[in-house]
Length: 453
Image (cartoon, rainbow, N blue to C red; front, side):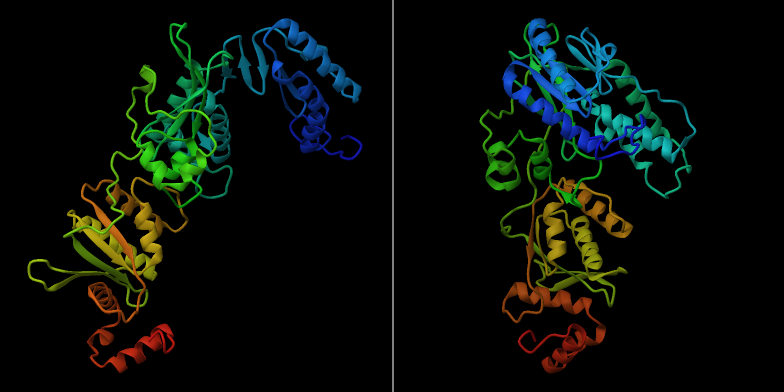
């Protein structure tokens, strides 16, 4: 690598490309890995190489092969840096005969700047897989990383952030992971409630006093990739448990996640105090996938021009149309999203909701027990937060239906949608009786062609 690249990178002022170094060492070690097969595990990160074997004799033989191959390609090894006794250190980890622990992280008292807090969060994020620090445990610290771009800007630690640091310090001092046992199978368990899942990869050793052999914790990111992520999509990233048959039949994300998996998936876990925490994927989905019988039907609409946020429905007792209209500044989607939220807050009984906004329908269908990603538009974020809360705490079923707007179809659904549109439109449009005049105003507002009118 030195012949082609020559610049200083990393704190050690490494004078070649790290990517090229990784590739170059891999090229040297690949024939050895193929030769030893399953008798040894050879890992490397740039110029740091780890050789694992079941006994000392095999280790000496394979280590000699690795050293000879590296030296044959011009690599210089320092004998005093070769670690063969327990414990040894590799990539910030302390490895004993049975356990793996991260090297200690010094967490000082405040004051903190943005740069210092970012470095701390980066260090804690690195050790989480071995210590079991959940995303929710560290969320108060992650939230402090937002704001302006001044690296020296002070960050004040409130009670929640200080508690997060205490949890991290306690975990660093007392927790550890384990080296895997070749004679035992790996198992995976999902912990916590939706949508804050995390996964533990472990082995179960009946011989030990504490049978749980922790291999690695797996957590969802602080910010999900989608604005709204359903529990099934989160589970597809971690893998699964309760109501497995139903979810496998109805959710393609989970089907792809388990495709070609040869092992067994079970909802029964070994008896251990760590597994006593409540877990629910979806105790019971409140949203109905089919229209509800004898339920109230609500129609919503919103206008960015009039800023009207509309709910309308036909009263089952009086058979008269009633409405709930408020003024909400913003786009049509914002106005209609506000109307949907009011519908869930005002009507706890079962209902079917009809909307002509594909965006609002899609968001509402995905909101139950969903995980919300922070978005730059604070108004949208607050509305989505309220929607997810209202739906996730709902007891009675609801059904969401999307319809196309401005159709001339007959029947109750088209009539209700037209009434919602009229309530959201300018006052003069709703008062017009002449169809031709309504068509002219509609064309002026929406630029519709003749077939659409």
